[in-house]
Amino acid sequence: MRAFWELSSCRSFGSGAVGPIPWDKAIDYAERKKLDPGMIEVFEVVMRELDECYLENQRDQQKQRMDK
Image (cartoon, rainbow, N blue to C red; front, side, top):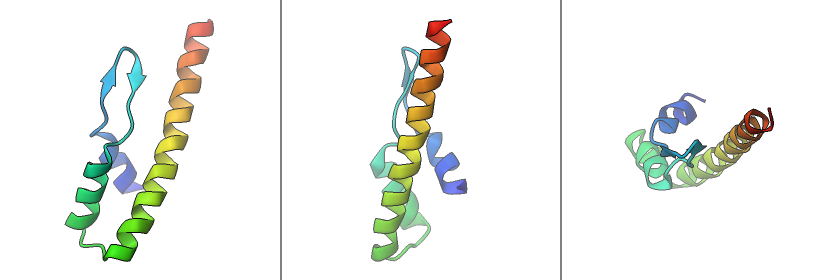
């Protein structure tokens, strides 16, 4: 989870929207942590899943704010 929140700082923000974590940053992070190639693939999948859940939650919150 720490990796996810650290990588979240690399997101782009604009027009009230939150962008995804740039995948080159996720791979750079995994390589800096010296993960072996197989674990980098797992790391990427896990980060994508977490990121999609996060972005979906952000979209839902934005919609709720706009509906008020």
